[in-house]
Amino acid sequence: MDKPQLSVKEPLFAPKKVVGFWQILRRTVLAEKLYNRVGITFFILLAAVLGFGIAKFGATFGVLFIVTAVALPAVYAIVVYPKFGIIVVLIMAYLLFLLMRIGVSGPIGVIMDVMQALLMLGVLIAQKREHNWEILKGPISTMIVIWIVYNLLEIANPSAESRVAWLYTIRSLAIVMLSYFVFLYNIRSVKFIRLIFKIWLAMSLFAALYAVKQEYIGFSDAEEAYLHSDPGIASLLLIDGHWRKFSIFSDPVSFAYNMSMSAIFCISLISGNLKLWKKIILGGLTVLFLVSMLYSGTRGANVLVPAAVFLFAILKYNRKVLIFAGIAFAFLVILINVPTGDPNLSRFQTAFRPNQDASYKLRKFNQKRIQPYILSHPIGFGLGSTGTWGKRFGNNSYVAQFQPDSGYVRVSVELGWVGLLIFCMLMFTVLKTGINNYYQIKDPELKTYCLAILLIIFAYNIANFPQEALVQFPSNVYFSLDMALLTVLFRLDKEKQENEAKPLLTLNTDNNG
Image (cartoon, rainbow, N blue to C red; front, side):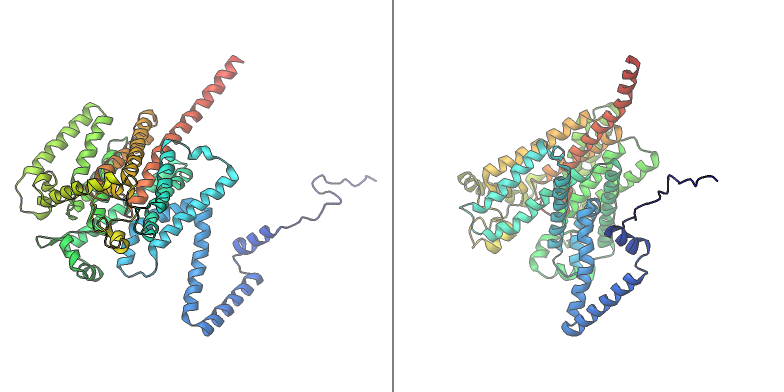
């Protein structure tokens, strides 16, 4: 009789397979979708708790329960899946003021701060595991750290009238600027960058169409109530009987600047290697963005596209670009000088004749008047000492009543000439790094993206002179994104070149061996 053969795959004394807690949880929740005893028990207990809470504490308990049920998974998703969090932040940056205007209650601005803080927490948790701090190094990162630290130290400014004003202001500076590191760390693929750009253009398209609706159909009831809630609003937004349009943003200036940046982005992409139908779509979007920009009545935005085209012609120097720049310049000259009765076009023309504008002369006079105060206070009067927070917490001081009407002037007053020097060094470092990266990047797609982002950052720096261009949503979030992309695009191109060089290196090694 033959002896029985034991199978190798089935040992005689095989140990029992130990099923861990996470395997059980995954099978119960994901595989069986809670359609089991555990799930039925869970929902019965959940219904009992909810019913008892509402009976004991009223409907408030139910609302808080639902909010918690939504908030906890959202917090988990933002920390564990940072790409999801980034997309939510980028979309919310556009919709923030629209939600508040239509009556959505709650601290939406604080929720934005919390989301950005959670994304930063996610980076710190990931770094604890990876210990890869090299990805966060570089000249831009160094200058941003210096800028944030300087702003934090301003709480001890002896000339500050209020520490509370500092607390309100630091949110829009330090927290938003820290999101630069979130973008720098988590954006690691061209595919994700394309998705970000598509979201950006989609939100810009929505904003432009909403402005067209305001221009030709009218404002909503909530917007009408806002416009007539304060006589001061009409003095700013009503010009010659025509309301300036603000679309889904907080004010016409923020809207106009975002339309300008979106138009610059489309123009830059058109110069790349795209299919004809994509270029036609981008061309149509450019026209729509520029036309809707005129509805805002913001003169400072009108010079941004010509300025960006000028830098575009310098960086991408060739015959076609020079011809395009020449045609654009000739069209601009005609547009500036053509006789018109249209209020939007008339206001556009005055942007190129600032010395004939009364508001520009007043700003120039105010800036000259504040210069002695800036020179005598090298670290300024503290964050929030001017503008809205200055009026609220500044104890009626001279600086509190001063309206900066310029991002650079605000920095000079609040942070002194030392702060202005640091800020200018930061902007110089960003632009210098962007230009260097543009000329070193080899991949055509990444090179086009780098050029587009560089032109936008350049335009934002010009926009920051006549207005405060970098402190309001969504510009503050997207400016941090743009700064990060300059480094990310160069990093991705470098990785691509290294990957392409590896097969050649291996082939040469094999041949020599």
